[in-house]
Image (cartoon, rainbow, N blue to C red; front, side):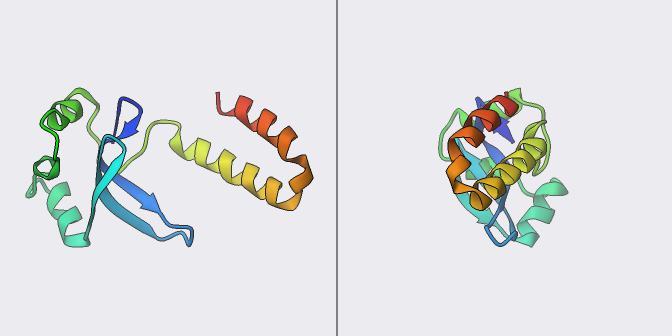
Length: 109
């Protein structure tokens, strides 16, 4: 979930090795990782993850946004693919870094 341009609520994190971890974020900061049992309980409505928030207004923020479990914003996956391609190109040709930055910045807009 995202609120005000920051991760807020349930979310997924991928390690450099590609391992998926699920957790809860508040104003862009990770509060805690969730184990599989907690994830299932949240998805079934048996656990109220909003009780894990530290700030009082955090629950109101998630009420204002479209509710979804463990998904990023609409263009997140597409932007992630573009970023991986850009990083791969930069690794293959470090001297072209400035050209790639300019091109890639425009493609994310």
